[in-house]
Amino acid sequence: MLSVSRTNFFALNLDSLTLEGMAPTFDASLNDIQSDDNYLYLGGTFSNVAGFPRNNLSRLEMKSGNVDSWNPNPDAAVFSLNASNDRLFVGGSFSNIAGSATPNLTEVSRNSTLNLLFPSNTNFPNANVNKITNFQNQYYIGGAFTSIGAQASPFFAKFDGLTGTYTYNLITADSDVSTISVGENGKGIIGGNFTTMNGVAKAGFAFYDFNNDQVFGLDLPSTGNVSRSFSIENRHFISGKITQVGNRPKGGYVILDL
Image 1 (cartoon, rainbow, N blue to C red):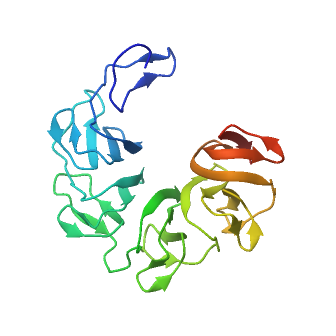
Image 2: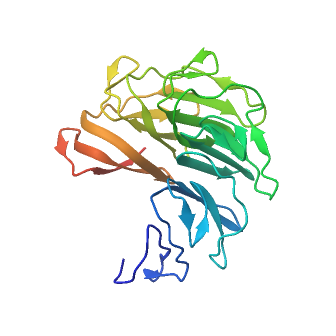
């Protein structure tokens, strides 16, 4: 990157477009990065960060870029992190984290004790959680799961940040959800490998109103699938193997205003 060696991670000053000094090396892929005022939280499939053994989840001190002692040690990949409201939710394909059986989704405390805070029961997704997104203290999860505990809820659900209570079966999709993003107005994108949603052709992505939990119109015929998305204000950036949107050819990347 910019003719400077970096291994799976770099920090860029967006004003000057120059590399920052923070440059820890990761021995494998990063899947997600979240931050608070003091730390960067990083999830992926790595086993070593800057020479320290760290399996799939680590954090760096924001000012120094140093790896600190926090080490939850999930036993398989972390695909998504959500650091909001002073909480940290972790989603992935793991079975254990911080020494406890918490398949695919948990909340990890940010202090050194690594207490697991959520869920407090056996309501775990039965397969990968690929994305966790927060809107007004409602946490939306998407993935390859088809049930949560004993309750069927294919690929998508939400839980209340205060009570932990789930709402199931908000959508009906024919395959997994890879990404969820929401804008400031509460409208956003659900993306994945599905070809239909709620019985309507929706190849790769659909528009979702998080204010009332409804898929809404703006039907844009598309071809391919969506693996990543993020929002800035009410503009949505989506990427994946997208070859066509709205009868226009696309090279894997689309920007939409909702």
